[in-house]
Length: 243
Image (cartoon, rainbow, N blue to C red):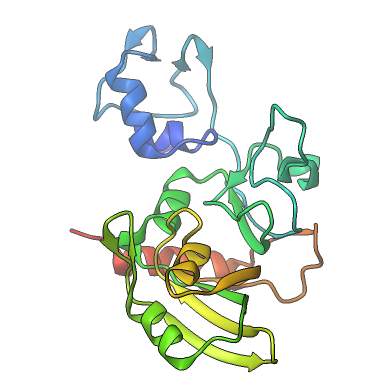
């Protein structure tokens, strides 16, 4: 088998990125064949022994899943307070995957799960500009100027948000349904953007991430990504990768 860089190998064994793997190597927590590993080391997973914090690690099948997260569930693998977590919905054959980014406790919709740390970091990082589309209800009924202000960017934490695409889908006397496309993922971003222009979010449903759509996935269910979806995600990350 062709040798691969040690950070890539460690990232393939579970819920960490290559950057995190580099940190483990720098701190002396990785041992390659009884010697402390160095950045840039290459390994043959079939013949070399790699330990992290004294435990042997081995590569595993790379998994890519899509979940329809229900409302009132944490995007977390564990909660000390005992609240329901998405881990409870992951079938046992997919053990080792972790969520890519987050959805608010009271939000629902598409969530990607994987054990590919590099792909997870790329999808979540704004520099890669992966589009995430949401169906959002706000009240009162949104005015055109409020939508334009949100779309052009509002100031959150002292910085202006990246311009978004916002469509006014429908309206009643009390609320509006908006289709919002973001290329970044600040904490509570949609709620805070709406609040900045005088609107209150009453529901959020994520309907797509890049080429992956929520269509056909019932709330609480999980499905593997198709080969085409996986290939398109990797292609998008490669296209948007910064030099």
